[in-house]
Image (cartoon, helix red, strand yellow):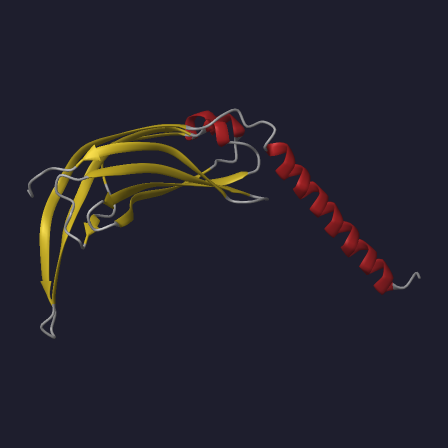
Amino acid sequence: MYSITARFNQIVFFTSWTLVVLSLLNQGTAYFFKTGKPTVDLKILSADKFQHYKATYYNGGATDWDQVTFKFSLEADFEPVYNWNLKQLFLYVNVHHEHQQKGYESDCVIYDKIISRPDDPSSWSTSSKLVLKNQRAEYPLKDIHKQLRNATVNFEVWIEVMPYVGYIRREKLGDFEYKMPQQYN
């Protein structure tokens, strides 16, 4: 009963259960102080480089597609999701496009950003705000069905909240419609 292996076993399992209980308390108490939903405002400034592309392959095959790059402004306040259990946020802007005649839907991420929470709680109020002015999208929107001209696309702003302990949850912060130009530029 008083052997070294029995003592080691007691120490390891006591420490493990203590960490499990503290982790569950951390996860459980973090959600009691959630004050609301983050706010976001997205403005699409322009659809730059809206062009029709063609490519010919070495074996004689060819393909073509529509491609557009956007410029936008984004203002967001993530302070309602900041708590002691938050590790980081993953923000992304998704473009959703439906075509009624062909019956397909297309989703494309055009911008993403990882926002890490600082360790000092006094700086949470300033670090939780994101302001992007005249930002060019990181990734272009491509449509192989060539149906982007004069189409209505839906911009969706999403965040994934990644805690230290607990489930990663995803929240949709807003929908914003945009009418595509009729002509290529």
